[in-house]
Image 1: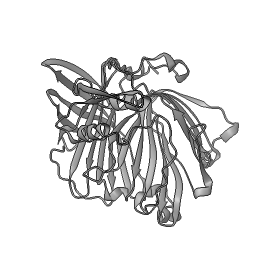
Image 2: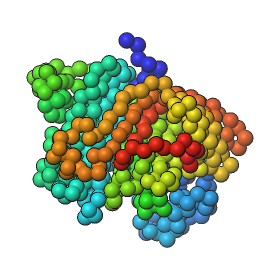
Image 3: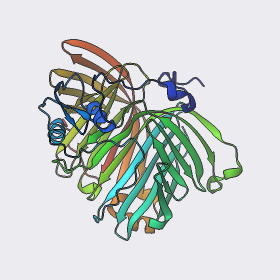
Image 4: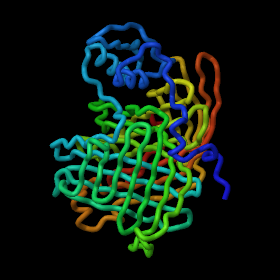
Amino acid sequence: MEPRAEFADLREPSHMVSLGGVQSNYSVLHTREEWRIAKYFPQNRYEPVWQRNTRDQTFMTFSLSRYMAPIILYILLAFNVSIPLAAETITAPKLYDDSDYNEFWEQQFLFENGTIVTSQFLIANFPFSKQHGLMIATFKKPNKDMIIIKNGRTRDGWDYDPAKQRLSIFQHELSGEHPHYKTSLNNTAAEVDVTYISNQQPIPLILPNNALGLPEISLYAPTAKAHGRWRAGPEIGGAGQGGAWEDLGKGLGFGLHVVQRKSLNNAIRYWQRFTSITSTKGYTPILHSFETPNGERQTVLILFSATSDPIRFDNVEISESNEGTKWQIHAKAGSTSLTGSLTSTYTIGEFLLTDHLNSIEAMVAGSLADVARKRFSTSYSMTLKINGEKTHFEGTALAEEITLGKEKKRKRKPRR
């Protein structure tokens, strides 16, 4: 079987260390944290305007823009206030005392043979179990039934090892430091190992304490190149640890981190996301669109490039057509603009969490169990305009629609 084009130039993670990442064009070397702030600001949108020295470290701030998120970051930096940054490691859970606190790391990878592997490592204050750990993963090969790998544990059944940057829930592990990460899933259903590398710097997507009350969301691996293997467990008729591993080959996907101090379905009603899985030297788009329970919307589009800093658009409009199978995109960031479209090509699968929890697990999870997911592949075609110069790019994206809470008919109207 010939690999699809988007996987053509991938190499196994052991050989990926030499792959180039996003390069900074700033002439001033910051501390590690300030460099990450600089990477968050698109260079062709926010020019450095002044510098100051503090504690023998050089800091750089940027001119104000018309968009609130960069303004907030600018003000915080100017007054030397702690700024929330995208972590470069799998960090220790925050373990807030809020009754609805929940925090999770989510990973999704589509492999060249059509297999999709998803996992979510969740720490939450459930109604009947504070600081409860839950790992739930899906493994689906083309034309095969979905395999569910899941385990939940009370506080004494999960652990975080700061020396190894490793979160362990039962026998499942998530570990790593930018740019290298690993997910290991292991129970009687199946064992799955995915090693992955992200050339993009971790980046904040949604800041904490935002006006819409959305969760704090960061992309710790905005896009990632992966290699995977698996073997069936005795629960589904496999040999388990005595069996042979099956190679999944090369894959592409992402990793994100979410922190929320109130019930997630009270913050988000609908979450739509597109992540490019086209391996290219051109622009790589990532789009996340949120709708709150009261109908307010926020959409963020980020373009990554191997040769320049990321470009972030907060002024984004999406128009749906063909009964939600095609989307027109219009985005602006200052004088820079982007137009394009995304078209659904095939459905990967649908997943309703409550269908895979027993009565006790559903009771413990409470409202967090009421989540419906639809995953599909899309093609995209976009044109970026910078200073009058147009650049066209296209590719394939892994897409997902997430609905939280009881289903209701959504109005098809432009989303910002």
